[in-house]
Amino acid sequence: MDAENNLANQKEQKDAATLENLSLQDQINFSTLTIQIYQSETFKQELIANTKDYNDYKPNLGFRIIDSLKTGWNVLLDIIVFLLQIWWFFIIGIAAWFLFKKYNSKE
Image 1 (cartoon, rainbow, N blue to C red):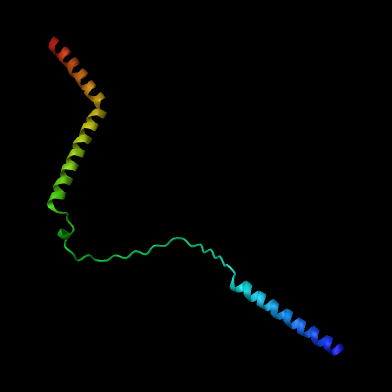
Image 2: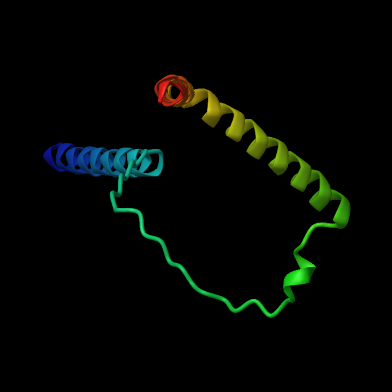
């Protein structure tokens, strides 16, 4: 009887060890691993010679004309805005001209 109980205990321990091993293997197989890696951003720049002609990259004549008209219009608007910003200079100039004319005409 002791031999059978001893054998049953050994088999039970072997089964428990096998179940523990299978449980551990199951946890490993279905585990989720999260890794966070931190590193500063790095850039690699490389200069490549361009062998194409400059004229290959120029837009056609129509686009260049339209762009020139837009640029000219923007320059005109900038000149008008600049003149409106120095309105005080014109008032001082006109006042100085009237004062000069007033004092110059008396002499």
